[in-house]
Length: 282
Figure 1: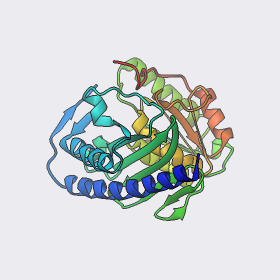
Figure 2 (figure 1 turned 135 degrees about the vertical axis):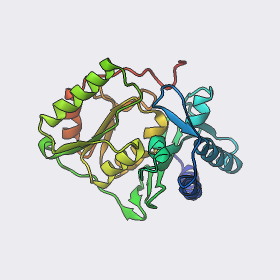
Figure 3 (figure 1 turned 120 degrees about the horizontal axis):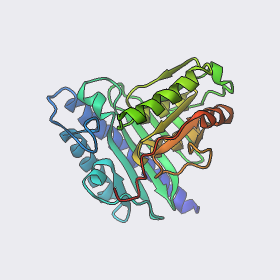
């Protein structure tokens, strides 16, 4: 990477922060209003008018500033645009992470903006819309929350860990049996506890801040993890595939932790749940 590239990515981070704050204000106002809610892939995979409005705001503003860049957005992908990560500078956007929370005014809702070049994640911005926490990370430059440097928990013993996860959109009996079985294994470790907060991006930020030791999920999307992966790594943590290999952004599965030891333990316990890939046609 040249110094010119470095300067450019710094500008990209500054722009992403400004846009995330602006989008967050839209979400703050929208959460007070009556919501028109519909579903996408399953009855529990919700979308609102605000999701579309916020994504359009983010993409149109970024496109005006960086016309040669590419975009992957949650609602654009749901509408049929192909979700393919190329070597081109690419923004990966979740306009409202925690849509179900948003619908119920449950206060775990975030805007997430990630950025990748040559398929490598370079920066991430996550804005907690309802409490104003702004998480940022840039490769090689650290991770911060409202300007304060983040540091993961370095706990290596899973019996002293708080672990976060999400349920996923599939709720058929077989999938739920695997989901509950995975949780049972970790609770039997025994971990201190397992929590579900309804926002993958904010859960991952809790790993970066050291508030929890680990996170795992099957069924999330690239826009759920892109920004957060940079933030966690820059805070000293690890982000990997549930097989134990390197993170595959399109695989719809992830394990993140403050220590490699806790991450490895979780990988060994998990029975996989298949969700396909983001970059494959349905």
